[in-house]
Each structure stands twice: as C-alpha cells, then as structure tokens.
Image (tube, rainbow, N blue to C red; front, top):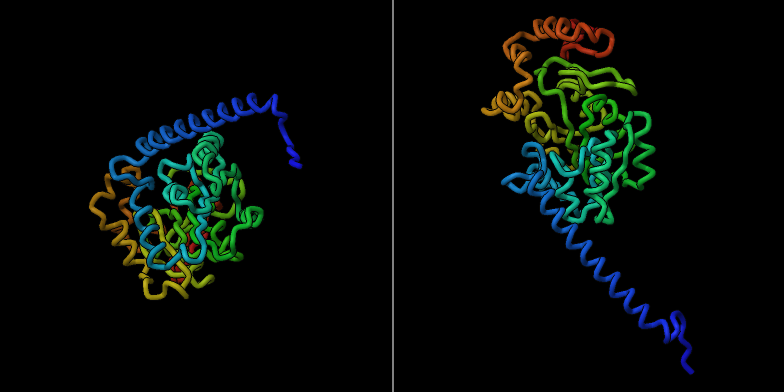
Length: 309
C-alpha cells in the first residue's frame, strides 16, 4: 500500500505549473543579480578589478597568505563598511565566501550595504553607531570568534578607543585601521573618547605614536603602512614581520611620490614635516585651538614636554 502526502492528483498539474513558475522567477532573479554585480564591480573597482581605496585589498590578500589566516578563521569584521563595495576592504572576501559582518551607521550607506550583501548567506549588514562601550556586545551577538581572521576599522572618529575595547576581548589575526596620517611622529595625538563625536576637518582619530600604546598593551606589531591605513598583527604570529613606526610612516606615506595628489586636503598641515617636535606641538595647539579640551597631545617618550590640551 502506498500512502501519498501533499497535493492530490487533481492539483498536481497546477502545483507543477506553480513550481516551474517559481523556478523561472528564481533564475530571472539570479540573472538580474549577476548583472547587478557586474555593474557594481565595474562602477566600484575601476580598471584594476579591486575594491579598496588604495592598495589595501592587495595587502590584505598578502597577509592572509603570509599569516595563514584562512586556515584559522575566515571571518572579517568591517566597522565603517560604507556601501559595502566602493572603497571596501571586505567585498573581495565576501565574493570569496568569507563570513563578513559589515557595520555602518549612515542610513544611506547602510541600505546600500544590505543590498550588496543580500545574496551572500554569510554576509551580514548591520546599521549601528559603534562606540567603545557597545562594540564587544555587538560582536558577541553575531558569534564572532575571539581570534577572528580580520578586523577593518574606519569610523573617522574614536577609532583608537574602539580598537582598545575590541582588543581587550578579541584578538584579530590581522587589523587594518585608518589613522590620522597628517601628524608625523613623535607627536602623540588622539581625540577624546566621546560617544557623540562628530568628524571635523583634520580632527579625528589617532596618530601613529599614540598607536604604540596599544601595540605594547596588547602585544601587537606594525606590519606596514599604506597611506592612511596601518596593518597590525599579534606578535606571536608576526614578530619577524614587525617594522619600526617611523620607518613605516616614511615609506608608506611621506615618501610616496603621489601622496600630495591623493591627499590635497592635507596641504595646510604639510609644514609639520619640517618642524621640530616642540614646534609641532605649538603649531597643533594653535591649529586645534577651537577644539580645546577635546583631544590629548604630547611627545612620544618625552614626558617632561607633555602638553595636554
């Protein structure tokens, strides 16, 4: 005796027709998505087929191999993910099947981010205003591993304090973080940790000399600098790849022949590269005078010259 469940024979033809219609719709949807993807890539990646702002994508790919990151965890957390494609450090990994958590607060970009991720089962778009006090709860809610593969951080604000908070609980195998490239070592600069921080011209983030505090506190090393991004990794897996901050800054920013063209807005701070450390402090005290009380500045390893504003 055969027992059938589901549709009766009389309704089977209708069901088959409905099923065929669904298949056609699914194929049409997939075809449309493929076209949209090609258009997105063409608009966003230019001639070189890459998505990041400068050379970040190639550098990330290099360290995925050198540090064997994919063998441990194929996850990237992208904080300040933008629209998910244009100037993205993570979209190439989305296309290669990585688990991606993209976090963006701007409503228009967040909507575009969700659209960019919608057909990738392991890509999650989250509209969220990140702070040092809430970021770890968010990462835990998405079951992010403690030793996640890659962290990309670019929120044009309290990046230093958010990174400090993340490293207190998580240990990414590679970190890509934007820093305030305008102010050369040994000046240590960081904006104060306030939840409602607003980006203002040249006033955001942290300087390289201040980054030394986090490298020492959490046992990380600097791998290299690409214009306005630093690449960091835990000492235990990247000790031999470590580079001195001053050398990295010169090679990755100051001595790049095209940097003046790429960073035209920095022209009014170019004088800093010819000033002494104490003169730089005076220049910045005047330059940032309207933000008095909203940042910290001093000289690396010169506590006697410390100047807090």
